[in-house]
Image 1 (tube, helix red, strand yellow):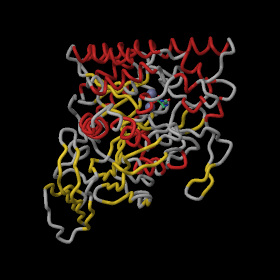
Image 2 (image 1 turned 120 degrees about the vertical axis):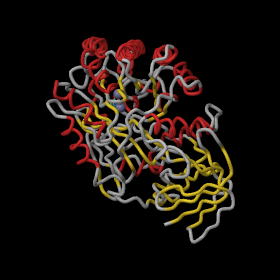
Image 3 (image 1 turned 180 degrees about the vertical axis):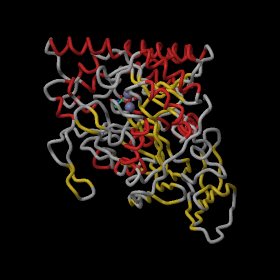
Image 4 (image 1 turned 30 degrees about the horizontal axis):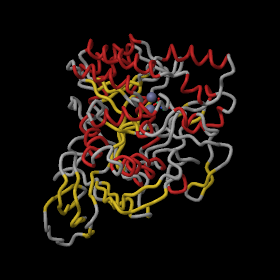
Length: 473
Ligand code: URP
Ligand code: ZN
Ligand code: ZN
């Protein structure tokens, strides 16, 4: 099947140009002016932008966490992502204690393969590094899982010690794999949490006050230094503040292969949101910080101290006791209400997989905070390069997958839970005005989203084998 998008303004990480784009057999077949229709289905994109599909490299679909599980699965999360202009994502397959990594992957394939609409891959989150598991790490690369993740926080749950982290860095580095890290000092945080709870300080704001920016800065520097000692590449996930950015920059300035991401929510929210009566909605780790940190993150994205904007999409219902309607059926799952008696029991995580590109367009690009090319670079191209998917994904080039979004810069919408598709009962950006929306979203040439119409089919997504020895950007 052939589709021709005519007269659009194409945007890549490096260029903005007028051209037609022909898709054939799931690939971008031709780019150029005045391409003949030649039997293709034709869409006119005059006055519109044409972008590569977004890639979100940090999601948690169907994740058991915080006494419940994330409310989006590999169908509902994919549908929401597509309506937000994202066509591909990488999820964390989390190892349960005692499991082999093979079992972890099998478990995540069971959750995803029949439901997936988008193309997707896995990182493996390691929580139990036995000698056998250490030996298993290089085998992941052979099957296209080329990144691992370790947590320096969530004591007694996911947290690993420095021995585990360093051994993993060495092993992954030798196999050409990338190590990702959740960098917060979980030991110090646990002491602060226990103290706050003992003193009766249990409101949601104490989630942030017991996870100070120093805990993130310290763990970030430790991770950067250990990556330097291992001679291995490192990717720091969900960076929230200027001090943590400085640690990554310190390593990069000294030639280390370290990179970092932030997530869309960290540009816009702060401790003040946690102080609202519904502050639990903003509870995630690391926490929202300050207006100065919001500004530092924009600087870091513009200055390439950070290379990616992802979401850390890990949604929960705000009130899981009240079912919501999802595709005509009631849906409920315990959510943030689990933490009514204490911040320490609020499931950590926020929705964002649909919000990311929409919010960054209207409240980033339109506000002059980042260029359209940089938006494409940090949301599409760098994610593909860093995680071994480029040039199959992440750009508009002949031979790349035809993952393409037509954006209408003049379309407007008041955003919020009613306008979004994430399977939860709230949206962090409730009432925010959007100008510039995806009009058509194609995955491998298939029109998944056409205005408000959803054409996605469960099982239509493809699991992605990724390359090792990916570049450092
Ligand atoms: O609060 C968060 N971020 N929840 C998801 C797990 C993680 O730390 O990424
Ligand atoms: Zn994390
Ligand atoms: Zn995460």
